[in-house]
Length: 294
Image (cartoon, rainbow, N blue to C red; front, top):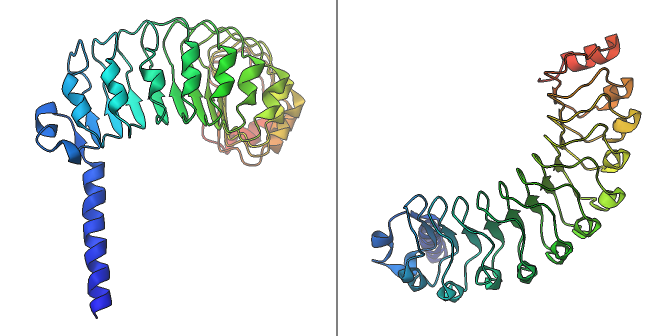
């Protein structure tokens, strides 16, 4: 009986501990009352022009959200947050990623979406533990080769930039599961993309593709392929290789037909073919699509 009581005691206080770690503090004043108990701090949309100096008092902080402010720099003192794993600086006024941020080597997630920078600093390669990187809606015109040093990346997003090419170096990131490149200037992908054997999600929407590169059909584990808003007129016959594909988005292209081989995509549950005014479907393809969500 004593063992059971002790176990319940440990379980109870363990749950309390986890609850404290999951609590989101959105008031700096409230958080400063018990700094050691603050693990998640959200100061988004507070009209901040600088990072509050008192943030360094939160030695156990793991997640810091400073999105939607007016920040253009971060203090050197931010590097004192030795347990920080998630940092959100999206929707601010950064012209580049500050060197201070690139010294936060404990980070596993970094969001710099919707800022104002056109290049990435080489020091970002220091973030070797990074798993998720969000760089949407900036003015990036290229993906630098040193991105390949972020060997633990599983998700990377470049939506809404000015990127015209995917470098070979990016295809060395063998742990990648998701790539978001919608809203750029791409018209092709490197053959070496087939090295990304773990890739499950690929967004190439709203680019300049006139045909789907055959190498994409070799991504055997792909679950989602987004090709909305391009200039595709047809798909390759060997799209049937994507046997695990569950979602296929083809809206707003110039498709005239779909290959019969598309009916071999047995795992497909969603297909979007809207706004392809010239599209004519064979009876077999029409029957196949009829059973899918559109």
